[in-house]
Length: 311
Ligand code: PMP
Image (cartoon, rainbow, N blue to C red; front, side, top):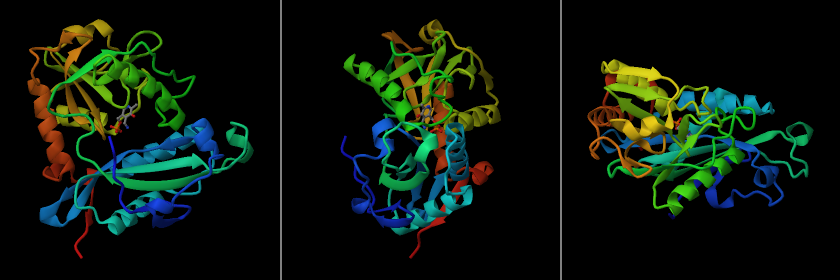
């Protein structure tokens, strides 16, 4: 897939052209994956001449927590990150839905893969137009990966660490090579963790079930939103360990994530999920989620940041 980027990004402490934002090939982040990143979505509302950014503050809380887990020094506060983001959106003035990619990275050119020696992290932020990342309508074919999810004592999945996404890339490649759209990771002890870049939900007997945060998952912001919306809709929600074989007999399954939004799953390891159509709880949550992120749900106003782009 070829992506287009917005013309301005934040780099080296200021807003510059995206084209001019370049790092040395010797940068530690490039060599060793020493960075943390985020993924935030903005939804364009032509009728309001502005955009709604979803859970901006929460994304930066998790971003800073990822850096805290690494134990590195970082020169930007939560408020500065939010302010930079709002300024960049205003500068690029998007006219479609978009995705923001904040990235904190070891910008030194040192040789050793060690955070302590010389690695103050720097910050960059860029943005691109983005509609669907995985199809939300077609029904995904997924495969349980033969690659296990990284464990908390290897590279913690709760932090969004760049280098850890090699784990995701291996699982994703295996899934695509096998004619599937996406992979599902098991933990080292064989329970369901999550997708390669999204959280997983299943429905059994009208109960919405998702893996606990202690099963090597990213603490997804969409996951939390889905659980809140499900409870608000009177659906029973349970966080508990999930066995692989439960995937084969569940009534519904879907991925959640900023990128994928809510994408339903049609087939897992060659077994049809439910009746092979989008399930009623999945559909209800998907419809509600799109209302929420686009600003059509008053109860969730505090989760959105509106940026007025009127000239
Ligand atoms: N798990 C992983 C491994 C991810 O990369 C993502 C995407 N950020 C998610 C889950 C979903 O998280 P969120 O809902 O916060 O985007």
